Every structure is written in structure tokens, then in C-alpha cells.
Image (tube, rainbow, N blue to C red; front, side, top):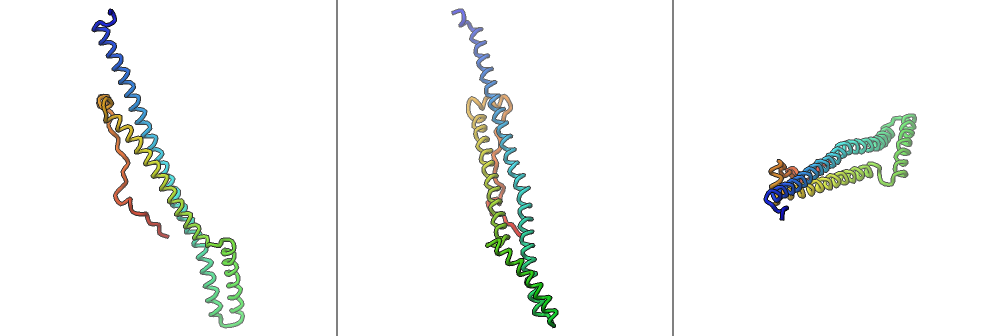
Length: 186
């Protein structure tokens, strides 16, 4: 019974309270670090989007320009042939048309669907994939924030969180208008 004196009981309560407080503190710090780490993952996906989209758009524009040039060459050669006044002009225009048509035929042989259509589809797939990655990382972020907020908002964690200065974190919320599909113009 010597161990149950009031002084020993008070010391035991202080030690147990200190251990519990340290446990909660470490838990809050771990959860805060997890939130910050997950936000970095969201930022990585944002950066991927920022890097990817302009490159894909420019690639599609370049392919479309190349193919538009061939279509333009075919139209110009045809117009030159129709507008030629003499045989020499018609031969030159026919040679020009033949060269443009051979490039056009090569495109159709090598790419059953015109390459720019594939590039547009690829762009749309990449945009969708990027947006899905962003959504996944945002969801993970919000899940970690939810766990942390539950810890700092429920008893006894709420008591320790307020004593230690830990506050609930803000969830990611979509910006107004983000429910609208983004438009890509060429």
C-alpha cells in the first residue's frame, strides 16, 4: 500500500498524461506531414498538366499545319493546272500536283486515319489522364485531411490539439466553374 500514496498517484497521472500528450503530438505532426506530402503530390500533377498540355497542343498544331500544307499544296497545284495558259505551264503544274498528291497518298497509306485526328485523340486522352491523376491526388489529400481533422476535432484529441496549437486543415475545394468542361481551341 506504500505505492498508493497520493504523491505516487499524482506522479503516475502526470507521467501517463505526458505520454498520452506526446503520443497525440506525434500523431498530429505525422498527419500534418502526410497532408503536406500529399499536397506535394497534387502539385506534381498540376505541374505535369502545366508541362504536358502546351506540348501536346503544339504537337497537334504542328501536325495539322504539316497536313494542312499538303492539302494546300494539292489545292494550289490543282489551281495552277487549271489556270495554266500553255503546255509548259500545265506540265509544271501537273508535276507540282503529282508531288503534292504523292505526299498526300503517303499520308493516307501510312496513317489510315489522318494523323491530326490521332493527335487530337491523343491530346484528349492525355488531358483526361492528367485530369484523372489530379482528381486522384486531390481525393487522397482530402482523405488525409479528413483523418487529421477527425483527430483534432474529437475527444480527447481536441483537448490536446488545442493545447498544442493544431487546427483543422482546409479541404481541397474545386473552384467555381470547374464543373464546366475545359475548351481546347486550335
